[in-house]
Amino acid sequence: MDDRDIFFTVLRNSIGNVIWYGIAAIVIVLIGRISWWLGVILFAMFVLVSIIGILQTIFVTLLGVVMIPFSIYEHFKGRTARGREQLYLGAGNLIQLLEVLIFAGYIFWLFKRFF
Image 1 (cartoon, helix red, strand yellow):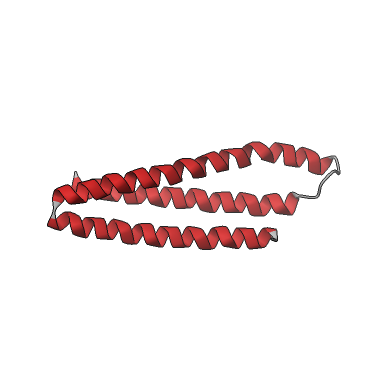
Image 2 (spheres, helix red, strand yellow):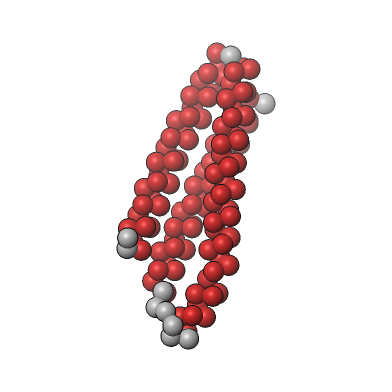
């Protein structure tokens, strides 16, 4: 798979995740209007699922950041020409971080609605 294909796959998946998590947040608020306790339980489940995704994204992003100096070193030694690949990987990491920030915004919005 080409680097650009990976980037666009990450972009497409992130957009889909943001849309589905947004729909889930709206449904939780609507259910919370009917039953506060059920809304709080769904909110807690939403937070747990989101935290797992957030931690995974942070871990992958930190690994990517750690690998950048090694990739630059290899590039300047002439052993590899991965500069373009690192650009797409870095952009993919930024998209995933933006996704995490949006998830955190959903959590904050839900928290304000219930508490």
